[in-house]
Length: 415
Ligand code: PMP
Image (tube, rainbow, N blue to C red; front, side):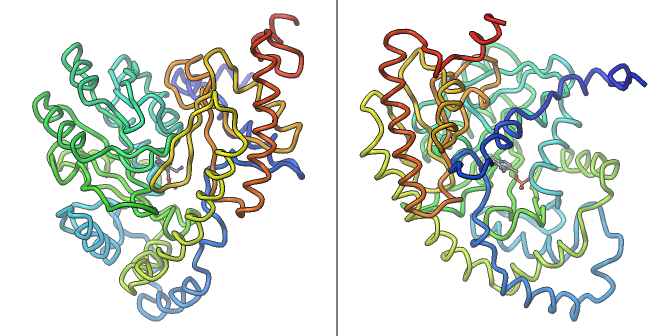
């Protein structure tokens, strides 16, 4: 059977995950990968999980293994309403929708909101998983200019004035891939702009709790509640394998998300939701979060210190106050996909930045580094290797591309 002939048009838009392909290559033994984007396994609270598993069995018994409401397990929705209150977000448990990972909300939003040709505004660069969730629905992406403090409100305002936009997607805290955080003045400006243009903003906040410096900044949801879908997850502060995401959307959007979710998975795992409820009700997040921060802060410090020492002066990079990533800008004209191939041969790997742009071919001279998955000494070693590769590249790119740094387009041109 020619299965290709069976595919719906939207399936053809999905393509293979470029990052997964890269991760396959870089997970070779002996390669230090700064390419991943996942939490350190040591950050998972294994002793607490053992304790709350017992508590869930005691407290909920067979109820934890029964079908449940699509909207979510009531005790978890109650616990999350209290958690959101600590961020200044007012929500009743009924307004909260539990999803299978926050990725589940992104998929649901694409499904219920995007028709072919609708405009979706996003940061340039943005979270690759959002592009993967939205692209099958054939939006036209409008990339909004950013600087080292995130999205430029005046660029957003100008884009909304030019054309109607179906939704804006934004990661305000320690953004994936840049690590940037949108300051309060810009949040106020964005809140004013979306209300004036009557446009929906999707505020995706998986990293807000992973703050190593400074003080938390109010979510945009608190500034324009009727115009914002706030999304978050327990993936970065508990365990991603539980796939525990949630959102707080304006009422009609929430209703459509529930209908869409019914067709996908009926509801998120009841047992996992019960574990998450016990984690929050038991006060474990408050006790465990500082431990995660104490694990990641020195890792980030070690990486930034090594970058100062080993990266060429023609490179610049972000210095995030939290999260999991540092964004690196190389000199104009570089092709980081080609550089990454050489780096992998030398024993260290990163993600070329071009994958995080909605339009192909942009950001060729950029890359993303992750610091949560390796210890300080390993991170320093990897950065030293990358520094060497970049120094070597500086000579090569000045003269023109040599075989070691051949770009993929040159390879195909030769074949
Ligand atoms: N949004 C952003 C910005 C992310 O970085 C991630 C995880 N990489 C997600 C959403 C998805 O997280 P999860 O589905 O595990 O909740």
